[in-house]
Length: 219
Image (tube, rainbow, N blue to C red; front, side, top):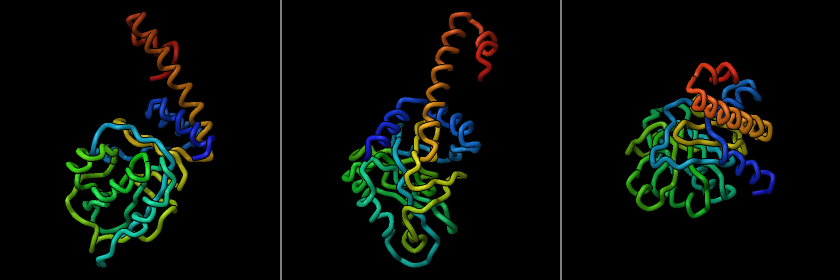
């Protein structure tokens, strides 16, 4: 990972995900936060890294998710693997224990899935790898989905994710930061964090929410 990107990742790891969501609203003029059913399913670990994307489509072929398997080995260490699905039944696991083993071996930061995850006990026990997913399901993709492309723009839970966009997530949710605007989003997110800290201190000191809101004009 180059120095500029690592500096951005380090910065986004230090600001609240809610502040990142607000900063994307302000800087980009559109939402960057995914729908709330994309949740941490393994643990509460924060994720932050550049997106490495996979697109899956409905099929009745029994074929392995080759693009995803290859990408796990080929993506830059520290990536967040983002898998999108089109058509078919969403209640299917597009990620499991073996893919987790590969992601851990290659030093990836996490996974964000438009579908489900399975093998939760194994992932929690053996890896502690953070996976944010729409649901949990024992169902395989074989005969239901096939991978059709990797490192292409995908849509997940209402947000377009481009390869290289910065994905930030914690228990509040997942936010996608467009790579070309990441530095400005980080600057604004830091400002939001600082103002909210000052505002919270004032509210505690004055014993008044109204006074804090009146001074800073933010809720």
